[in-house]
Image (cartoon, rainbow, N blue to C red; front, side, top):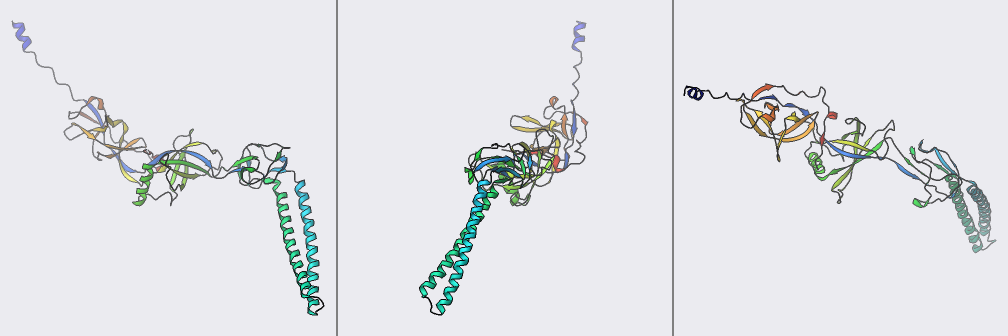
Length: 382
C-alpha cells in the first residue's frame, strides 16, 4: 500500500520547450521587373540569289558558307551571246543616228525650198515627219543598247547584300534560267548576320499590361521607344547580350492570341546565326521599391500562399501573401508583408499557427552587391 501511495505522488512530465525557428526581416530595395520569352533569331536581310538572264553557268567565285560583301562577284554566266546582242544594238544605233542626220538635213532643205515656193507644203511636211521618225528610231536604238548592256552586266551575278552565303546549288556548265521572282534558277542564299533580329511572341495579358503601363506613363510603348532587352543562349548563364526593341506587330494573331514583336542586337563576332533559339527578357515595368524574402520561407496551402511571421508575443502567425517574381534569388512579396515583419525562414515544419516559438535572428538576407537591371528577372504570365 505504501508503494502504491508513492506512485500516485509522482509529478507530471515537464512541457516540451517551444520549437526554435530562424527568422529574418524582408529586404527592401528598388528593383526592375523583366518579362521572359523564348525568341528565335532571324536575319535582317535574307536573299535568294537568282539570275536575271539565262545561259550556261561559266564559273563560281565563292566558297560554300563563306562571308561575302555586297558587290562581290558570285557567279558568271557565259556573256558571249549577250555581248553579240550588245554589238548589234550598238550598230543599229549607229545606223539610226545616220538616218536621223540625213532626215534632218532633208527637212532643213525642204524648209528653205518651201520658203521659195520650190516644193509643195505636203512634201515639206513629209520630210519633217521623216526627221521626227528618225529621231524616235534613235531613241529606240539607245534603249535597245541600254537593255543589251544591262543583260551583259547581269551575266555577272553579284552579292546584293553582305552576309554569309549558303552552298552553291548549281555547278559550272549547267544551263540556268533567268527571270523575275521565283522564275529564275535558285543559285544560293545569303543572310546578313550583324545586326540580327530576335522575334518573340507576347501573350494577350502581357500585351495589355504593356498598353496600360504606357497609358499610365510608367513604361513607354516599344512601338515608340526602343526599350532595352537582354538575351542569353543555351550555352550561357543569365542574359549577357543587350539589344533594343524595334518592332511590334499591328495585330494579335487570332489563332494563337499572341502579338509578334522583334528586337535587334549586334553580332560583331558573327557567332549567332538565324534560326537559333534564345532566351529574351524585356523590361516589364518601371523601377519600384519591393519587399523581398527568401523563397525557402514561402509555404503553400492548396491555392493559398503564406508565410509564418513571429509577433511581439513570440507567437507564429499565419500570414497570407501575394507573390511576385524571383529577383536575385529573393522572392518579391506584392502584398501581405511589411519591412519590419519577422519572417520564419527556418524550422517552418515544426510550427503551427499561434504557438509560441523560440526565435533565432538570422538577420536580413543581403541583396547582391551591385544590383542592376541585368540581374533581375521575371516570368511573363500567360
